[in-house]
Length: 148
Length: 344
Length: 117
Image (cartoon, rainbow over all chains, first blue to last red; front, side, top):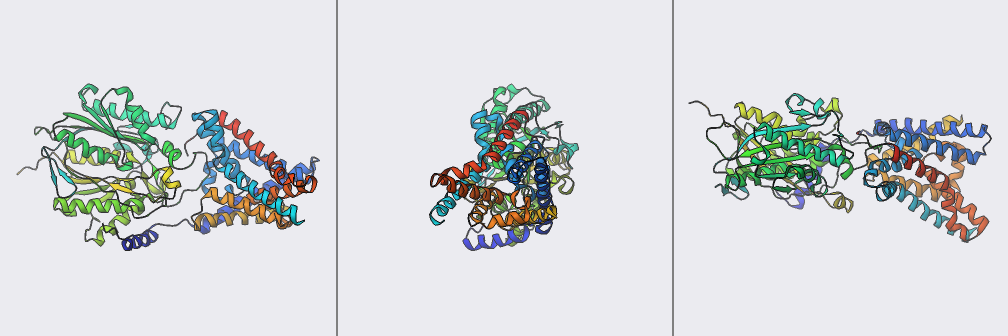
């Protein structure tokens, strides 16, 4: 095969032509419906906890914890991956994605031990979210401290 | 003894014969279009194991044992085992073959390992260093997902170009040429070079591997002075639907038309629409079981006389991918001829 | 009305994630990081809170809401404790959600075994 940069470039164009892309309209529609439904459900949970006497802020936390619980239960039962396959960003952008990203490696890597398997791998996706979230919050806090 | 021909090829003097094969597959493969050709379809992917890795080892062990039994032999009759898989340091094969207590060569050429094993094993047998050997490869969907992609419970989407790793094991008993037997024989092979066209997309392996397949196939035609029409079938490994399209275009650019007499094992093994496998099957077992279960019996019966088998492999790992490296690929070509002689 | 707002706004944030996923080479893990950082920055400017007032769970359930929570918690902590709050605020505000996720994931890890897709 001709190994020149030119033929590689030409090949990449050929790959782009032949390889089908994800159907972004269908995927976006599914993400909108599923993500919207999860958020509306979160709102319902939140409203419910307010009627039970929680403050608005705490009700939000209770709602998140409930969504996390449901997600992790469905992950354990092997159902979440089947839903997520269709919903895409609809299930991974809400807090459900964060919870799934912690539970699925915990289950998968149990076989490699409770410490370096399950506990360590629990943070493969969640860890970066926490690290960069925390770093950004420190930055925000610093700016706020000096500017306010 | 065989001889070196052209630049990258071997022509076997007394072509080693494939006297028996075994195909052990998972339930999904057992629901596919080739279901009725497989020797053994397992009821679940766990295979009496606690982990995916040991499940794959279970496949590797069953495959070798079944192939030897089908040849009417004992393990003691097998002088060497050449085997490989996708897991880190080849533990799929190693742990499966451990208890068989036979001399073992562990190979890695990703999904083209069966081609590498046939070439090296064939040379061993033709050279008189062994009378009888087994070549075998395995792969397991769940173990491969865990090694290369995400934990199985992760709710991620698969892109249209992604492939589905075949769960299975393909094992072949290869023995010294015996003119009185009509078994299909390995008459030549062309070893591939590492070809890297700069593809980085791990969900489009077919595109990464197609240039390697084209490179080896063109070299094969030159080394043996043959054309596509000299083969009843040209069978690539696991390029899948889109990689196979790319291969045909690459070859057409060089003046070779393989449209009428070629296929890809990744296309044959699953029903794309029914089984939601996107670009098709992949993994070392994909080509090994498709050849053994579907094409070799045709050669055995003399329905086809000569095939060019070109399994393809992507040689990256999770670390190289994380470091942003491109995907180097390889393809090994093997010519297999029917032992059935035409009557004159 | 609450529900419609939550549905539409939450859905739109997910669509943004889907477009990034399908149109760019950004992996899903990186999108999650990006969303949390974006939510935290917007929260720092006090912009995300207005969004939360309008859309409720539609803004708090998606990951940028998590980032906003971090920013809000940190600023509150700075008000109360001064400079030390810069360090303690973020972790305090996410403690509930993350601890719950750790607990449930641990239990799931112990109870369940991996299943084929």
